[in-house]
Length: 214
Length: 426
Image 1 (tube, rainbow over the protein chains, first blue to last red):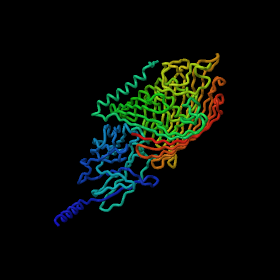
Image 2: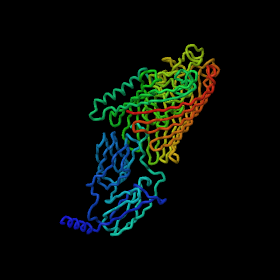
Image 3: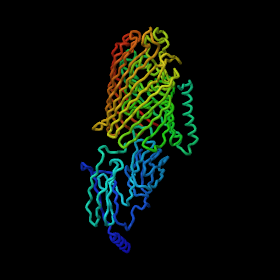
Image 4: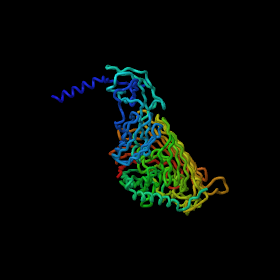
């Protein structure tokens, strides 16, 4: 009995900081939902509780000679691990301005990690498998999320207040991102619809060649 | 001009092997040499002309008996050993050795090279390759042991690449990777490919998945213009050893390749072995062989992959005869194919149309090397697992070679080869 009372109090406590759920729906100019769009929120006030403060380790795996996920949004200062789930080697690299690095992952279940200190887009490749391609989007803002197959980026437990919404996608023209006018998040929020302009030919990570040598 | 010495090929091979042995000692840091076996068990049935491997003029790897009767056989068509090793993260060694029943050595070397590819630090990626290898002409051979995932038998163009084109040399490649497209420039300098062109002239085009080993000889048909009894080219024996240095002159090739994310690839390749047609060494002439190869690949709607290649060139051999302007052999050659292929799950169905042509510019009365022909190939590649597959193929070839009339046969011949190939990697 005591336990459930404690849980109830904890729940009430969490409501007390007035956390709100919010989502952004991203579509392209033809009205089709867009997957892998990164939504970052820039609060126009001081957050009571800093989010994504860097304790969390996110993951960019390699499986079947493909990076997974294709797009990984992170906050500046986040540590990302690169576990190799394949039985063969990967030589992961980036020459993007935001982070230049090379990781040598010999074999299965070996993992190395990288801290992303600078905001920007980090394009990943593998020097052994030409088909491999992925993006890490390093946001300078504390709240980041990614759209799923339904085009929805869920943003839960936001503090009420005013935010500027920034959107990035790998198929926006190089170096550009979209900034929407500031919105106010209250205790009840309708999803925000955003339309992005994407290149007609989408970036994809191709599967490795049939019967390939590596 | 740099000169190749006789033993250079052995030296390079020893260097590659040395890399592998050095690697094994270092196994604690890097995984050991990665060895793989590839086997091809083949059931074939075909009637008509005997194969060119029986010293004849047939167009296929397998043919009918001497009376043109049907031959049905089960055989091991290929057993290959592939060794790969990472000497460092940037330097890799690759060796491919092979056994097959047509080869005149029990085992022979197909490729042996070192590849240096540092991690790119900009949009440009660089690569160096040194050793014995296929220059990147074939668009079909993307599978293990220089095989094709599309068909058992490659196109006429890439059959010839497998038979006669192999370069021992150095290649540099620079690739510019942009967001939507990729552009590569390749240049190579090589030796040990001076007899290339011999088969195209005396035998003509063929369709087969045989690839020559570096030390192997291939048979030529006993046509009256060559061989010790001939009064036209008696120093040309009834065989060719394509991977040989004859004239100590360096050949070269260059290529441009472009691909766009929309699903389009195109490229051009130029080869010139700079052979000296008047030099004879190791019983082999230097053949002055040059050609262009062009290709395009399109990802068409409904999951259909389209691929086309066109190769055109000339080869010259021998002295200017009878005080004229033509060498003993002066042959223009051209071939093209278009292939449509579609995946069905992990399986693949491919249909290909081939055209081929050789045009003899000299001494047609004494030595007629003219030929025209076409072929249809239909193949289904059934994926059984990650390590094995079965390909069923129907190949129909039709060709006209007037020289056949002087020996035995009608100038025009056609035949259909049915094959079932079980491929397994160990």
